[in-house]
Length: 184
Ligand SMILES: CC(C)(COP(=O)(O)OP(=O)(O)OC[C@H]1O[C@@H](n2cnc3c(N)ncnc32)[C@H](O)[C@@H]1OP(=O)(O)O)[C@@H](O)C(=O)NCCC(=O)NCCS
Image 1 (tube, rainbow, N blue to C red):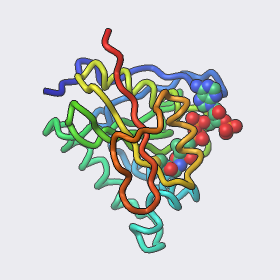
Image 2: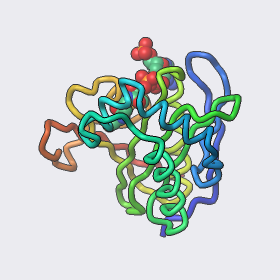
Image 3: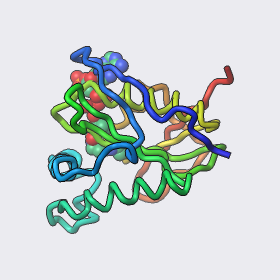
Image 4: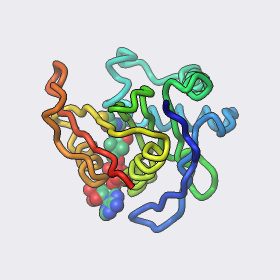
């Protein structure tokens, strides 16, 4: 049974040294400003191209989708089914996000995005997520990455994930990386 004794942890931006906060998204107020912020990041070229262009058929990521994202994240926490985290910058503004997509303790998939204005935070945020996941009872995490998404692969490698042949990649030239939690 997955249970998070700790739902937040401080993470350092590796390039600036600034302290950010990785925190369960259900404790971030989905204010108009936060919704605007998520909308703006999800329309940044890198995030939009990798995660939303195909899904939205080239239409811009709308604020309504950001609002739904906050609601969906709250539902995940309430049902203990999936776990979305935000990364807040030192001013308390959302800079990045990451999630654990199921409560499968043996091996759950992670996902993430970061604003290009906050280079240097994603790897350490993912490391923070691994620590929290370990405390919650996850034994292993994995990520599926497109072969040409080299920035994402670099994040995974820096965070300690290894290219895995344990799980066959789905169609679309995806590579599977995984990390196992070390026992204390
Ligand atoms: C994937 C993504 C999150 C990567 O963001 P990023 O800013 O490159 O990631 P990081 O913050 O970890 O790294 C930024 C820089 O800091 C450096 N850095 C980060 N953490 C570091 C650490 N712990 N030690 C040393 N250097 C570090 C990196 O080397 C990198 O330097 P570079 O830009 O010169 O290569 C971002 O490109 C993104 O949101 N893409 C779209 C969504 C996506 O692809 N999601 C994944 C789907 S599988």
